[in-house]
Image (cartoon, rainbow, N blue to C red; front, side):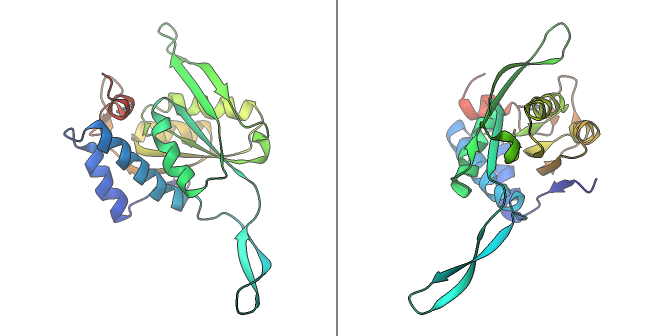
Length: 209
Ligand code: URA
């Protein structure tokens, strides 16, 4: 599982506990999801390439590093993925944002795309797909496939909490995609909720039920 990275930074773990707590209301939940996304984004972007440029400080000329290479794209899976976008944009404001919306067909139980709007140059960007909960892996796998079908070649997946089942499913379907999570929990329950998890991430973000 060398392509699965669990971010055990103390700040991330502390904030994760805040959002797991059922007594944390939507306002604080949203704020903390944003903070965790930013902290995780810092690690996800650790290997971005740099190049040296010549600049002049007030004192002398020097060579200094700036980002080079491919531009970035952030792709939230609707709707809960929206909660992770602002934290990522704080870190990489020049990133473009695409959206993928899926629902589960009640008969076939297969994910069906109802919305997909990606940056026009998606094949030239390094993409980070964001969704707080990696449960069965069905939505993540379908979203990644839809993005690949539109030409994307460089994709990472960033989730707050994963179930072992979801990690396995994405690793099998998309071995080229690195997965970044703050925690891998115990298991899924019979309703495909992550145990212990944090409940329904979309409902907790947006105050719905
Ligand atoms: N989606 C959620 O929001 N929570 C879960 O536990 C699983 C999927």
